[in-house]
Length: 191
Image (cartoon, rainbow, N blue to C red):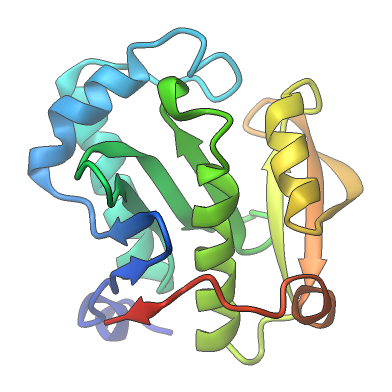
């Protein structure tokens, strides 16, 4: 798709049982600064936590939507209305494919939010792109928590690739396996 076509695309909102995946907003900057200020949270993903850097990262995420038709969403906990992270999809030139990504704040780890958000994103992209053969996740091998999320999504390790200066494991799931592993859509409502 051309950039002109994608700029007109509206970023959808996805609702799951416990989460809302919605477009990023300027009002999210303080919440993301807080989330990215946790050194354990950023241990495997890096990133600066000052407001300017957070805003620029958010602009890049929105730019991913504009340039590729996919991107990350802000993840909000339905029961509290709290911003709990960012999750969704990512791709860029030279990337191994459309990637499912999840970044959930540490005080919400262990609740299944990463899997729930990624399930919604993967289901959405397979529904929107009938020609998409697979979804990938790019994970540092030592990030065992993210490896477990990928495995719970039905993804399997396929290869190592040197990306952004480090070796990353590439986990994948194809459309057929996705339908077999997780036949029920996690998305209750996309609008």
